[in-house]
Image (cartoon, rainbow, N blue to C red; front, top):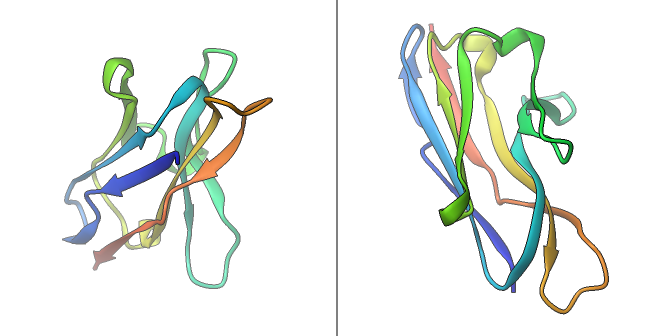
Length: 121
């Protein structure tokens, strides 16, 4: 059973920082992409930052210059360093990975359970 386990959410004041982490566990043949999405109340789930399957890094325009995605391939872990947080960053943050479990015929998207980030003004 493959799982994405997130940690690091919480409550922070505007201008503060948080770091999220997401580790893929289980029997994994290949990780094609891995990154972070978020959903604010009343909105859809949108991309925040991602290592794409083509080797690029994508960021939402709203977080460029403030958020940094990084990874530890040996640990199948991706991190999101969030600086200069704003109240508009308040959302549930989800880890997503297009990965290929052992025994599966192809890769497919897996999602973490989500972690709440709340930024107070």
